[in-house]
Image (cartoon, rainbow, N blue to C red):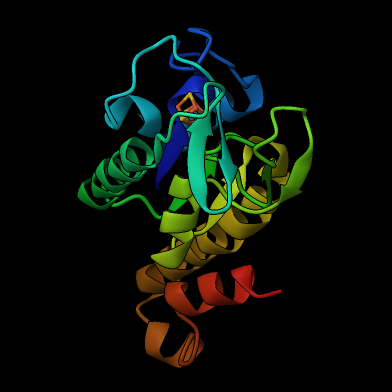
Length: 183
Ligand code: SF4
């Protein structure tokens, strides 16, 4: 399966401070899946290194209070296009980032305070129906992946027996994936 990944989590030096944030357990996923790295902030035309940004009142500002919303939205759109072109079925994105964060982001005060919310790119992917996980949710990703993989193995075994219509009349991969991401 193709999985979109925040480039910094694979060790690429794309972060605002010019560094990467390699996550070994995520990198290990490449043994079984194709990981496609993207950095929405670089794709939005922002330099590296760059001043850190946070979301406030639905806009993205850097520490100098300069509005960088347009670059963030452009980079998110470019990254979404890569997701579509490469047919990624899920994404693992960097937690708490104003682009990639899911569930929690910093509140715009640059004081380290977290609030509920999503980064610009994570929100865009979720709006498109792409399941988004952070690097801190690899257990949830595994739970989401396993039914699909089991289904692939099962379907393959059934095909070999040439009895698929009889054995799996109401179950297909899509059904199980939807079931897997239900609360
Ligand atoms: S925008 Fe996303 S991929 Fe790029 S450095 Fe920030 S967290 Fe990593």
